[in-house]
Length: 368
Ligand code: GTR
Image (cartoon, rainbow, N blue to C red; front, side, top):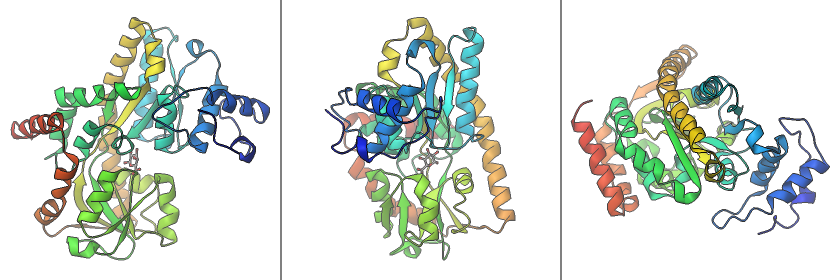
């Protein structure tokens, strides 16, 4: 497959994050990108650009750190967790293995960074499960509305066999699932009025991540779903293109979405985690010893992240309430559960999905 027609000459020159070069070298990298065959993914212009950045930033993969992208800015718990993972790798290999983090979405939207990770233009990317929903049915499971009973239940399931099976399901898609990171409870936030019952959602335009599952959830509540990248949400709220969105406290805060949308209605409808994935192409070239280092460091970054996460949720909530965000509980969570339940029937279709869901549900009964 070649690059998209007219692609190279229509490109705006960019600064390459790592070495500051632009122009011809960038074009060469993009041309190199075109030589990656990718049967499942068709590189978008932006993905190609990002891949070009990654390619240029270092030629000899073995001699440079792993490159990782994250849509969130420096200081966000997922970003700091991956940096901690890098620190552990450095410490354990005398600096031979390391991670270079490209935070703040500088390498593109999650769908794009996932795409380039599959064909090796990036070594790692930290994303939510949502952009994986369309390629791997098992990733739908943790995003099912009201599946988890509590944070403990979610953590237990994702740390245990269900989580391992879902991570492993990414390998046929050229991705190695390294670990899950918390992404908390997602609730709705809106510009004009709070949501108390599904009736309040009728006719509202609600932004969702690029996932059919999320679109279906919003439709089930009688609202219109508008899929878009996280980076576009603030502007869309300000301009009235959308009436609201849904996310956890830290993302609502970091994206400053609370400024145009001050009503935060605690539906807590989804607890889908974030995930750190590695390019299988890169992974396949690592010696066993280095794979063990990467796996161990990723695993150890999870409890580290959770401490940061819990703190961040509390801080974001307190800060936003202090600046005038109006948070409300919803009237009857059962009504939301009932309205969103048909989404399960549509997206839970394989025996494997059904078995894993039963396992997760049983783990909820055991505690939490
Ligand atoms: C956040 C998540 C991001 C991104 C975002 C979104 O909670 O950490 O990876 O998926 O949600 O809504 O797009």
